[in-house]
Image (cartoon, rainbow, N blue to C red; front, top):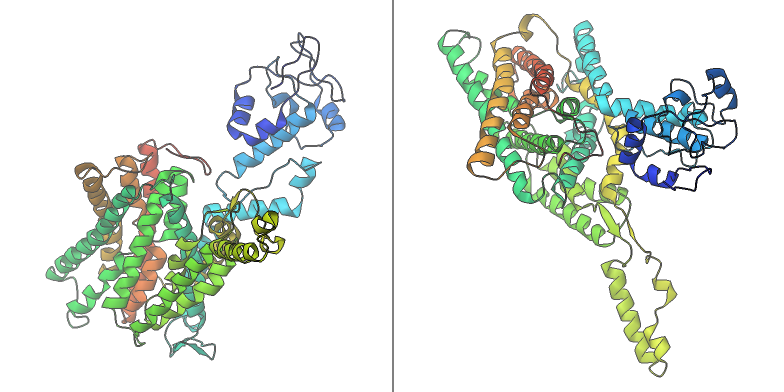
Length: 576
């Protein structure tokens, strides 16, 4: 704020306020009085004039150079101290910018500003604004995923045969696209679960990588021990509850031994292992806010859970395809290539995803491990920031060789010997720029969230009624809801309290307990595991319904967050 002599106008240092969101919020929230300009010009309140008459709504709308709608900005609501006058246009622009920031606080990629916008109201009516608004809603509330679940349930209950034909996994009843990849028949279900979901797990891995980097919520790495211990509890807890319930119900005569053997019933233990990352992410955003350390804690735990679930499929459930583990060397090659690209300081994520990703994907596919985890191995090699003040390793070596050769050729000329050829300097620019890690998240987040509609559509179709409701449904739901909550909290408490590893900054035991509840949502990944666990149609239907009913953890977690008075931390801020 630039103070001036008595009788002169006070002006607002807009650049400072634009760069400091906290000062902007305090400026509008805490200033005691209303100050407005006296005319339609840029004249502002001089020192000594405490108040001037505010213009009427019609006067303001007629005079405003920006024509901001009343619901976005009202001059009488711009609170300003008497000694802090500001140009009307600057105050207007700040107000609109602040409103956009408040509305888009959960969307990490909304980087639109009004600094270069001549007419803020015009911007608010452009297709670009509405595209960003719809994208924020879709990514914040996982709307496509919820619509996909609803559409799948309706479709499966109206015409189950048609649903299975398009989205099923039964090779005798499902439409194939007429070609194979690595011996796998390509169907719509295959393209969604094994190709598209690579990007979803890759986006989730970005959150984990950012969290474990220096300054992240799980840094130093000692802080990651607690979520990994929680993962162990989130695997052993549900499995223990599942076996206990199944043995108890079988002893009480709940199952017909002539219809299903106990071994067939127990084969569903792997269903209760995995956590649905997408739903858990959504619920955690509601409970904690997008910037809370518990979000990344939960993501690390959920991804580790899902890795455990996929490994269980690979090693404990039979696969119709032969597992050729030698192809895992392709995964190693993909990681090595990603490391090489990192040394080149490439700024775009596409180099990593489309060069290294296919190698890891094909290696996992041929090894009969779920190929959707391919990018989880590649994303950690993407740098968050790139220092462009120095060239990459290979350019350095090339320049060093050129300097040696030149110094030998022109020894008599010291200037020539010490100078470098301009042709080898194209990468030398000053400063640190954003790397491909968060650019990948920013560019692909909306695409991934839209694609979750098709993932839910392909996996959530369950015919309700009849054979779809049974004791297996009860066992799976209780195992996910009770087993996850108790297991994660117990193991996390032991790691943080008994072994003194400590929770991430901003987390306490009440946050850990709510994270355990949220992790009980098994929905989509549990649906996938169920396809491998049960071959009998009635048991498969019961297992799918049990996975869907585990979504009850979402409202329970929201209520628990209210009862524990958990304070939300908006995206872009830190709970430290």
